[in-house]
Amino acid sequence: MNQSVTIKGTKSGIILVLDPGMAFDQLREEIKKHFIEAASFLGKNNMGLIIRGRKLTEAEEEEVLGIIADNTQLNITCVVDEESETERLFNMSRTVEEKVVPVKSENIDMTIPADVCDNNAQILVGNLRSGQDVSCEQNVVILGDVKPGASVTSYGSIFILGELRGNAFAGAGGDNSAIVMALKLNPLQVRIADAIAISPDAEKGPKLKLKKKKIMSNENEPEVAYMENGHIIKALYGPSFLRQFGK
Image 1 (cartoon, rainbow, N blue to C red):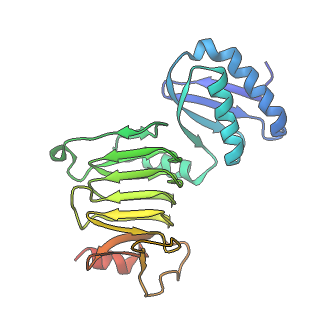
Image 2 (tube, helix red, strand yellow):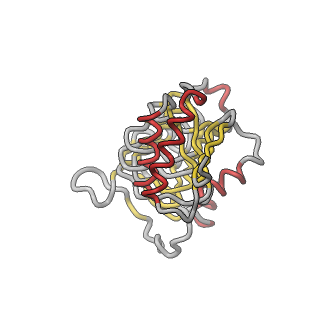
C-alpha cells in the first residue's frame, strides 16, 4: 500500500494521514483509491475525520469530503485539522470534565431540560458550515468557526473559540444577561433575548453597536456582544468588560 495516504479507523472517527511532500493533485487520487478499498470495512457510520500530516486549504478539505461521500457510506460529522489552533484548544479542553460532542452535518437538536443544565456547557468540536444549525438549552462552547449561513442558538451564553461570521442567538429563553463571545466577532446577525442586531455593513435593520472605548485597541483580544439599555453592544472581552459584567 502506498504510504503517501494512510487511513486508520478508531471508535470515534477516521484518521487520514497525508504525505506533506506530495502534491495535492497526486494525493487526491490516492485518497480516492484508499477509501474505495476501505469502504466495506468502514461501513455506514457517522464519524469524525482527523487529518494528520499536512494542513489542507478549505477547498482541499471540501474535495476530501466529496471523495469520501462519493466512494463510501460514511457521514463525516466534523473535520479536525490537528495542526490548527482549534485542535490545540481541543486538546487543552480534554482536561476539563465536560461532554464533547462532534458537530454534525445536519441540524442538531441537543435540547436538555433547564433544571439539568445549570451552569454546564455543551462543547462542540469543529467548524459550523453553511446550512448547519445547533440548538441547546445549555451554554455552548464551539472550538471552531461559525461560517456564514450557519447558526447557533443557546438558552444561555455562546462562546466561540474561532470566528463568528454566521448567526448567533443567546438567551433564547429570554435571558438578557446572556452574551456571545468570539475570538473574532463578525456576525451576520446576533440576537440576545428579544433584541436583534445585524452586521454594521448591512443596509437595513438595527446595527451591532460598537463600544466607543478603543474597541479595536488590541486585535488579539476576544470580542463580545451583550445587552446594554435594550441594545446589543460589541466590545472587547477584556478586564473592563469582565468588571462590568461581574457586577
